[in-house]
Image (cartoon, rainbow, N blue to C red):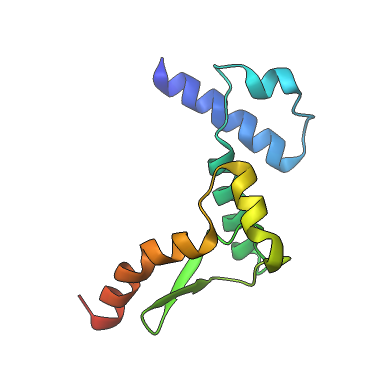
Length: 110
């Protein structure tokens, strides 16, 4: 049952992102079809990075010299925290602070 619901939710997410159908409020709020806005944000940024385009939420990073940096530029960077808040993401500085240790370890070769 859980896999079927996850698949249905992912299908709705894919359809919405591809613009193949209008995602009505009813579908977005149906508990069986619920798609987490955070998942949408991460996926949207991942697709943008893979296409070499600016990110919307800054969720995709690369470790550069032991520090997290956006994998591609962030569109309208001055308003990124407002967009992140709308979907339930922490402010960008907090997100990057969480990733500092992992990037430092990568730079150190550990």
